[in-house]
Image (cartoon, rainbow, N blue to C red; front, side, top):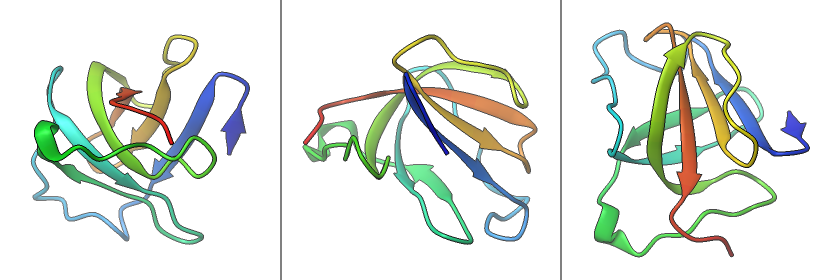
Length: 96
């Protein structure tokens, strides 16, 4: 779903392993949004990747970790990660 301030994606248990590493503030992550499955995984901050402002796919930095289904600040991408029971607030490293 697209919000006025960012893109909120939700990851269900079906697409993510319960053994996934949780993410911390400052970590870089790769986000891939899909029709039936969204994914998030660690990424290299120096990768030079960019975020696609229309799809939400790309490389982001975790700016805060909140309770599940919490709202992030305006302009951030919200990634609701059900297996971690967390909402990751993300800022794009760059936008294409």
